[in-house]
Image (cartoon, rainbow, N blue to C red; front, side, top):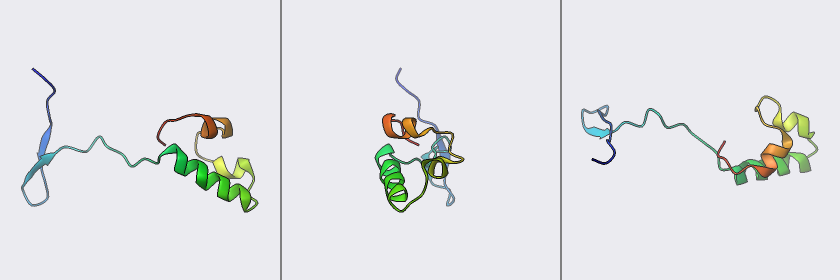
Length: 66
């Protein structure tokens, strides 16, 4: 049987894959590099992660996309 591809129509009427479930994400390495640079520039850890739903330890240890 195999998996089913959901197809939809693009803006010009052409068929394409339905990507509505995809969201932008950031690789954890990029987030760590940004956090390290902000910290180097004098920002506090609490200010860097404010509003992110992440703790500082999670940012440094977890390998999930953000």
